[in-house]
Image (cartoon, rainbow, N blue to C red; front, side, top):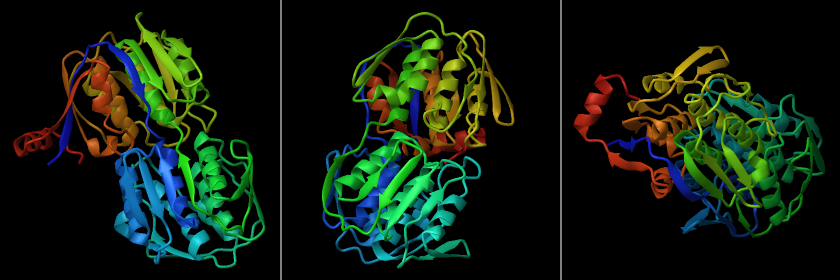
Length: 435
């Protein structure tokens, strides 16, 4: 049976939220554990469905995996496979990062193309061309990637686009190559720095993450390590957006304020009071929201595409018109139809969305069709009049650890329920099917 969140909106939020470990960091870090020479302990590992999918891949490969609270221990010693089956690859697009890690460990890998949210073409051509440049032989046969890289050699690799996933895959594969690999036009995201720090903790020689050039000196033996994942800046942005939409005062704790500067500057422009300390941010919103200058998603340090959807739910209630330009994924606007069910006034032309703020939103039955779109609907429901019912939680659960628990602690009227068969039949007949 399917689950749903029932939210009765219109309540200001007050209090503090502890931020989970970053989904976009922990997945490549867990993949990297297969390269280590001993047990790897990854702390602040959130309980997300994507994390569970990653742990299933590790167990399939033969690694010993155990969870103890917020920590996951991975012993890669018993690993005796170098393939990932199709049904596990289809669960998330970031599973492709296992390609570089398994090649570094075993010298060969076999897997299908990855799955995940349907956000439009996210080709892995950059990944494959970079691995081939390192000397890997890759055959694409019937939707499968058959790879051999026993003699990979470091070299300079210039990315035509600063892809996060490609940068991570090259970093991992280069640890198993002989010589020096230099990545130019590398992604700058904080999650890239987090992966570098974990690799360094294992004994890898990696430097430059956070800049356009990353240098990896491969061929060194790696050892056991213990590491804590950085806070999830997108989860923090979502809870700040919830405070902005519903009103009140919300503090996100255990965060890196500099990682959220583009988001908090937009929220401040919208009429929110923002105060930042070393490891926390407080947002207060008492006055009406205002429209902001055009929001254009860009690679870090630009405005993050993952925060676009929750911020659009805030703009839906602002006085005036806000324009969103999506430069990363072409299908990032799939949540707009559901926001419109709640009374939002949004027009879309290609990669541009024009949001005309309305005085109020209304509770409705809505369905998440992707992870961040689900977050947008959750933010909108918290500010809407009346009751909303949000389904499609399998998407939301990929990136947010029990959001209903944190939001209830802030004063939201929210609960997770299991839909009955009758409710599910009614929902599907009404056109809300998405699971």
